[in-house]
Image 1: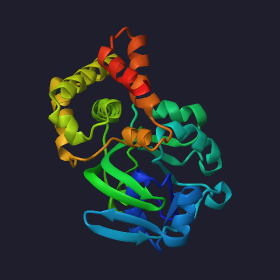
Image 2: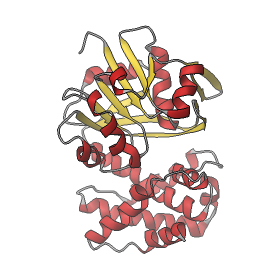
Image 3: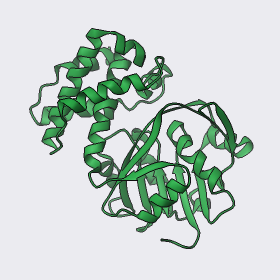
Image 4: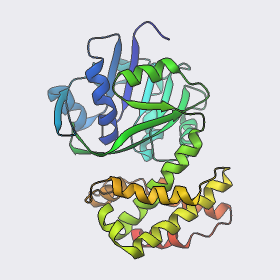
Length: 305
């Protein structure tokens, strides 16, 4: 366990970054654990001037971290870097903040992908120790510096070569529901089994989670998209069962009727999207293994048309 000052950077203060950063910044204010929000533009200005507004379960907090910055020199070397930004910006962001990462920096990933380590190593072939992770939560940006937790338990799973118990304990004490697991790849694929097909189908057909659940035809397509991912997972030595597919479908019932996937929201708001990681990745990698993807391809055609 480290005994001196710990510097934890939260990279990207959007829906996920706000959800993770808010309790940590609140808990560790004026302690030896320094919480740094790494963000830029309107978000940085809003939080510097007015704090992060965070809404969850009927409560609203205004939180000021120890530092809000987009300047690597000001941030300095981090002990921990939690990457909560969208998958498409990870490489660019890591290149920008390379000087904040040493060999000893622990990098926690919370992207909706199954190949985060691969993505990070493109930019940082040697620096940092990677703990791949995922989070089960629906949390959205209402405006720059204003984040609302709308659903989902907020449970985080991480894994890596080392458990880093001191860090898991520190994050847990800071208000995060975080668990270290040996078989993180299994959990990443189980989450991907839900996130990727739901993102694709809600974007293609412009339906909420509740509307999707009520449409038998769309649920049939969704299930078959999950079967296609199941086939791809097996090529990566991950066994996803029929029960896993049923559990994933049932997850839809745990969100409010009007919930939308982040991919869908990005399309609606004309933002850059994670389609490359949630739709294209499945089709391209299935093709490499000779796995047919008629359902994924039909959804893809509807998205791009």
